Picture (cartoon, one colour):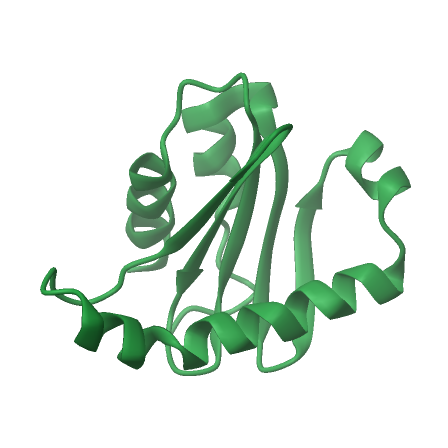
Length: 122
């Protein structure tokens, strides 16, 4: 099983370069930030990061329902496209997973992020 000790930062940097904003791992509501670019760190406080971890757990818990609604196989990740960035959540089990955030200027896709995370954690 992947752990916060799994290095996803180096392969993500190789794949997306300076577009990488955040890479982290959550296990339940415990959050392990593996990488956070300085400008992003200044924008978020510890309480905001805890709220994001809570939201990610809800995301993982909703996966079985989403899989039953769409005839597309197992849910490998969720992505959210915002005006200033892309957030990809790659679940690893029922209560844990990786969050990766990129700037919108990146050529990388959500699928690219999933592939890098899966390769690094297998």
